[in-house]
Amino acid sequence: MEDFLDGHKTLLYYPFAGGIDMRLKTWVRPADWNLVASYYGKKDKEQKATIIQEFKEGTKRMIVATKAFGMGVDISGIDRVYHVALSSTFVDYIQEIGRAARDEDVQGVSATDYHERDFYYMKRLHQMGNIAQEQLELILKKPMEVYHMKGNKTEMLVSLSDFEFVVKLPRTKNKLEYEAELGQLIKTALLWLEDDLVKRYGKYLLEVSPQNLLTEGYIQDKTGDAFAREFQSYLTKVEGEEGVYKVRLDNLWEERSPGLGYREFKQKLNSGQLWEGSRAVAVGKHEVLLKENAEVIGQRLDGLFKSLITMLKTALLKSKGRFDEEELRAVFAEHGMDVPSAKRFIGSLLESRTEEGRSVSYISSIKKKDSNELSFTVTKGFDLLLSRYQKLFSQRIVGSKGACLQFYCTPFSDLNMLLNLLSMLDCLSFSVEGGGTPCVHVCFNEPELLQQLADSNEYHNLILDTNERIFEEQIELFTLFFGTDKLTDEQHWDFIEGYFTGTGLEELKQKFT
Image (cartoon, rainbow, N blue to C red):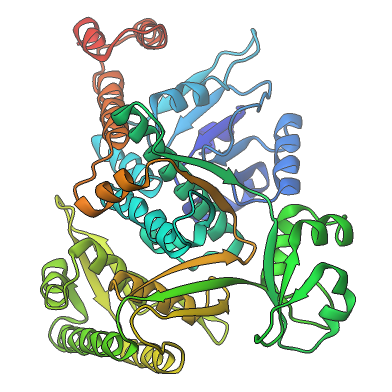
């Protein structure tokens, strides 16, 4: 770090935003902290603009950044680009080193201390942004559930929150970050699904159009009628529900909050801070169809929780809370749940949640070495959480098989979590409308064929297979490019030029091995 700061202007790329600021404290001498800045996606626009300006002017000599320091950044004088780990793709790597020596009088050096263990970072980044085959199969099933629930309509809006427990993102993020990441993953998955089906059948069985901005939604205010009085022209009271109103969110934003950006408006809407003197928050209308009598569903839930408590208490007593996927598989097999659903169920049930203003996590998981299976660790307190869901069930889930229930709640509520858990148990189907959550417009052109695919439990997405092959090719490219000390600088540039002008991997191997 001292060498890079001594007379150089340096870009240092680090793979994860979460570790940058902590690393800087150990990498940089206190006397040099004012010369270094970190840059990553979660910093606000003003911070990013200030950092770039200071880097241009030379008051900052080094930026430690993720790939968020990306396209469109054109700063003169950069003469060092250093990679702590490999980039996500070979294309990203070339773009990143291309930010050095843009001036004719600057001699640029790109440095990477290569080691095969660096592929760990690539694989982690790939897994974080990737969707598994089992998730795509579940994503295919969900629109078909909604299709039947809503009277076999061939066109409808489906809320992205309907899919949240398919991808099971960590819920410790703030709501806007969570929603943005959820939306990106689900929209990508649905488009992969649409594309794959076109390639298979030569026609659109399913057509998906993302709807990003707000339209109609629901707001609930349990603190009085101040919000309703102020915005009455935008609201329609929902009969039989305490403080719940249907609202034109787009008009409310554009006409009554013109000074707020979209993100800020959503943030205030989600946190109940849109109007002083009220706690009006966006809620979703949850339409629920029971697949069994509520009494039978309750017995299934109680039986599963009893088995889970026995297994988790045994883990706490005998192995400090640790247990393996095999043990989980055995418990859930007794209750008719497959392993992918079981893993999502327990992860969703016991993952981080907010209690009394602090984040609480009852379970964690890590992937075993040289295996796709998980190892879990549970902590005390999980049984209190399970009893809370049992109590909530007894209060809210009533009726006979085929009964339709309706609830209004936020995406982070216990009730929303309970409905998702019961959906994974195949005890009910539900769909969410409103709540300020982005939707996708879905057109069902061949519902019978789609239903056959969903019921077969054998759907396999070929687009995902292609993406996996491309990812493996990236690892081979990096291995070929960095895995030898025999290539000169000129040969490295020949390699890059060959790749970008269409030379295939096998031909590159023959030429540069």
